[in-house]
Image (cartoon, rainbow, N blue to C red; front, side, top):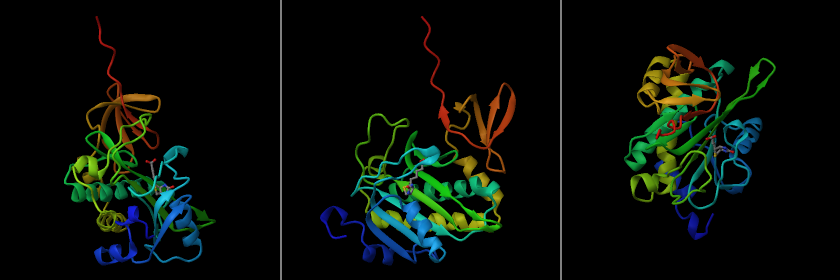
Length: 267
Ligand code: BTN
């Protein structure tokens, strides 16, 4: 990648900044691809090592959760997928997503010097605005668990977002007040995500859940998860969202959490 607008994302810039043991030690950089999650899955099927990373400057068909698309214009942000050879039971995938969220939130804080929150189950927010999204995809072949693909989209230097976005968005640059070199942001991201994925894999569930609860967006606020409305009480040890509905705490395992709109003003 040699054009000027990619000046901050080169392999020879990334390598010296890496502090990880596995994540990114094998890394491919693409100028334009459909989805790095697909590329990482293909690499995994072809025998890629644990921690192999695919990063793209732009994606044509970036995917978000629930079949949504992830707009991936060139020159500004990070789109990456990590091949993680973890045997994760399907029931624990949401915990892995939260572990990745913990790492992304820490990386955002280190890169932009701002406070970051985890918006259950797969977003990272700064000041109520979405700065990153996570898409963990797993597959299995009969009894055998295949490597997990951890996809992360991080808004780094974007200054403007489409007005029709459901959740307002921000970037490291907008939130922190200064542009951030993508190679640097990537190295910090891989370090913090590796740290939390390792802790997840080591079974440190309680430390993970405690951190997620400390950083939980909308905690104590009125919110809606699909059809259910209540107050966000926390995240359970299983990774489920706890919503207090009419005095009873309900554990929710999937859904899209949104802040409730305030009731119409009277008068
Ligand atoms: C979400 O917020 O719904 C998750 C967004 C995940 C986007 C990333 S960008 C890199 C990787 N490739 C994809 O197609 N999606 C993920």
